[in-house]
Image 1 (spheres, rainbow, N blue to C red):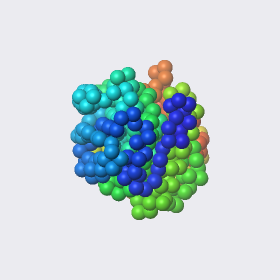
Image 2: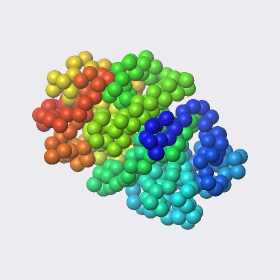
Image 3: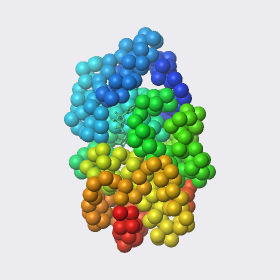
Image 4: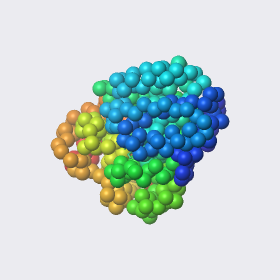
Length: 361
Ligand code: NAD
Ligand code: ZN
């Protein structure tokens, strides 16, 4: 449960939830119809079963499948989605269903936020990243050529259905990328969870019970933080651990499949610990432990792990400056006092940053 007063909602996490989506959503509907936004890849695996689940409860559903990929998260596909929803005569009391990863969740949530000044939406996240992170917390939006996620709104979902079973069709690389955000929770706020991940991370893909625990624990951590700081005035910024580096690397690689968001976050977490240790803020052994865990997970941890050429340090740092987490022209980083304790630091020395980037090449 995410306790946000009149915007409160439940996140259901378990197996076989897709097949029960009709009965979960039916009590929320004024009339028995929903509009589904999804992407073409997700639709090919999971749309039919979802529409069957709705039909079984007498709920009519129409679906629009957008192209898969980060490029969808922009004005052209947003326009298309919103106009399609109007064409479907979606009214204030209706519900929009987002079936997909973070791209679809962010875009559908924003479409729901601006359609008729706000309609309710339900998240059915289908990637590990979306289940542990983007489907919960109400950040919705699209990208701009000026940067990622620069256009958007806070709009909380009315329900989240995270079905662990749908992750079985997810490519390994996307699964591991989502794991970057799971690891982030341990690093930013729960050292014992990080210890659990060190022991169990490598078998998560093959163990639904362990996977469900990892998802539920991650969501619970995010929910508690969002409850205390819904619009990111303070503590919620801790969830951006690894993201200033990650966003710069995503921008430097053109938001292409050279680097997925969660991979950027993984490298970013490793670099945030390198920087924290270099600045004498956290124990020297912590970055070593983070890098070792990423290696054990088969995940990238350094700039050298990104295929192709990267811009020089100066250009990378400029890309960090473009990130929206900049206060008064000074670089702001989420750093760590130790594994399990993140904090916001507004005073990062540029040479430390430069050295950390050079060492990671
Ligand atoms: P994504 O939505 O692009 O999904 C990744 C790929 O997996 C896509 O090709 C998709 O078609 C495919 N896919 C999805 N589910 C599948 C399944 N079950 N089986 C097979 N293929 C499947 O990417 P993502 O990693 O889920 O999300 C990344 C986005 O999330 C970024 O835009 C990021 O900015 C955003 N994000 C938002 C928040 C937030 O709080 N709103 C938090 C973190 C990330
Ligand atoms: Zn992220």
